[in-house]
Length: 574
Image (cartoon, rainbow, N blue to C red):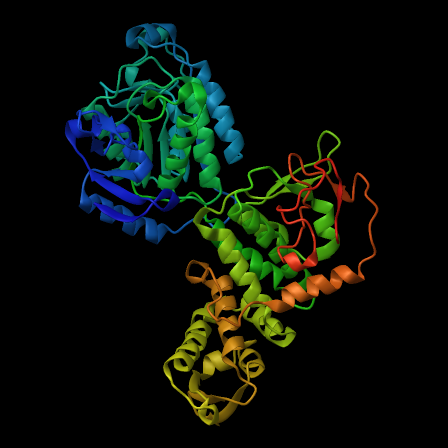
């Protein structure tokens, strides 16, 4: 059954499979057959993002566990990466295995992306791995797998003193029984056995291992049905983890990764990508959306100095959206120093840009520390960020200061959001005449005494009408207006409930003109900068439009439609 939107707007297809149906590569099936009984049209993976579950009951259990566990909102994710376990020669002969140097390279690549240290060769032993399995949120196992024994093959323990010939094979096998004795907290387990020239996966071995991981607590497993060339596997896994680290869910990440391999000249055949599938829940490794809210909170800790940073960040986000909507694929970057000069000494802007896909690169090869613009907008994070920044910039300094106090008492933010939402709903539902545009609202005494609450409501034009024992009654006065109250609601959602934050401003008059006008005014007041290696940037392969080119065309700057010399160095306008 299709139950949600998957990658690139596709619906997600949930497949309830058991026994030999687990071995069907659904990704490469075609939904159509033409009149000559030939397969035609797109692959199934191009129309749907696919997710496998052993049962609907297990799927619902996984969803509940996923919701309870939440998403890692920090950059400190616990990971375990294993590659190329080292086996004694006699065990290699007994199990018909060879050393796997490609898995060592793969493990190093994945570990670098996840910012951890891999367990390689002798370190990849059962004792070490059992110790770390229970703590890891992401597990990547680039090892041999015995589908006949339903086991993952590891190195023997480093302190093993028994002669090789006396070693029990169980000492190098991580079996289903071992997994069932554990309590895992992993959101994702990747079984990357596909470099080996092993036999294809068997339905029993596949079910035993994946079910053992799911029962032990893993939420999702990525596995391949057959061996895949090492280069194709690395391309797919790099694309897969890159998407995950940008906040994508696993279904979308795998969908994007399979398309990356599919569009690679030498690996377009389905044998190089269609064997991969996900079993479990559609999880995230990290929540860039949640990091967006945290970054905005950090910015607002200095409400008297954050407005410039909000303007500059909005400008960069809008420029990125403009390029994406125009289909511009060339890379564009600016120097980190140029942004720092404009935003001042506030913090949070860098994390905010990173949360929506901007990439920060250190200085190298004579190029200063640079910030690369995103070339896509996964899950509309850029759009959502733009709406949130516009809402914040639409507020006056008194309101921003009150919100900054509320950040320090986040335990009551749900209550204040309910209050503001209630007022907005009353404005929307009541057909009030010009003389009757007032709304009365009770506020409990605990919330009223919370630092920032009464300042916020006063800044929005609420008058205190009555003070009771347990609550106060407020009424919107002459200074209150629907637009400001809507901005506050959208700003609070962006800061404290980002999943519910809007992706566009809902009022036709709500465009945050202050942000655009002020940047324009600032630009007129800035003294021109001479193009140098540090204050100018060269856009490789572009039409000469600067990284900070305004999306407001009336400024008369190149907007991608005006031809210009590609070799021209563009001076920053701030």
